[in-house]
Image 1 (tube, one colour):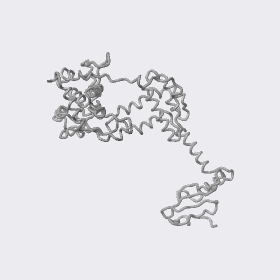
Image 2 (spheres, rainbow, N blue to C red):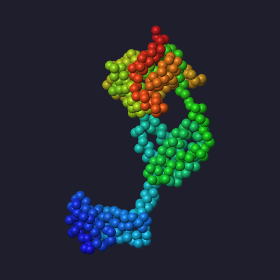
Image 3 (cartoon, rainbow, N blue to C red):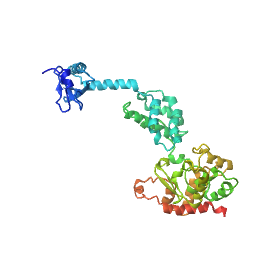
Image 4 (cartoon, rainbow, N blue to C red):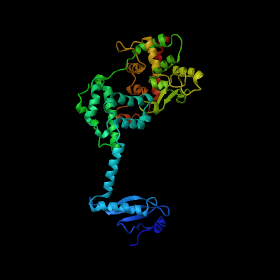
Length: 404
């Protein structure tokens, strides 16, 4: 068999048969799509499996004939010692990668956060994800390589808050598990050890016993609040936002982030895009006459911006704005010794709806709650907008009843 030389290699073209090197058994130059370009392949029978394997040795002419032969000779030497050269290369690459790139837990966590942060509902939740790890985990294991971490390491980090802050501890555990599963997907570790952490820690209180309700104004007291506080004295953007929040039973962030592009006053519908919703599902809100009036008033002074209720510099108003109003007014709630919260008005509406005979699915749709039962959810494809409009009109009539 004639030895391969550069003249023959430079003339190889697409469609040609592979050219045997003629010096090293099993070494071939396969043609590429361009004339004079190819790829080196060493064909051999694996001493481990007894099956034929093809080992790539680079591209021609980037890898010349002499260089390809040296690589093929080295591989043949391994084969003579019953070593599969492809497996040997894989192990060498893996060892090099692990020694050079094995991240610490903090490095891995920050990498994961960078990948997932765009999926959070808002900047606050994105920051919280990382902040909890910075506070409760990094001081303990942040500088440890992920392949050295065991379940005990995570248990030790979580133990100080496991019983005193069970909700936070559970979220932190889930975030640690997310990081370690990412590490497993990157082949840094075999599997996440976080899944068995609960076996090393005392049993937490049940979820039912640790649910903290948002302090709410009793639904019968909402009309008085509107008359004596919201509609009393000088008007303000904060008061307008709070009244709209009460009338729509929306979340504070949904009101504060309301954009003009979401509002259609002609059809009296506010459409909140999925990206701004907690449920990641688009939500339509029927606007009652008073809601439209509040928004129209904002339009006369703020329509040139993006937000319906912007701050002075055009950004979203702080989430403390409504909280401060309620604190300044010292608004009593259904929780002894605690001031009512803006989020609590959703509970006020929900209790009103229940006690006034409105169907559960209508009230839940108004609150943009998901249906936990998958079978039931499959049959509820309509958002019941028209029926909800009638309910919200009745809610508005109740809220404004003290103004008569």
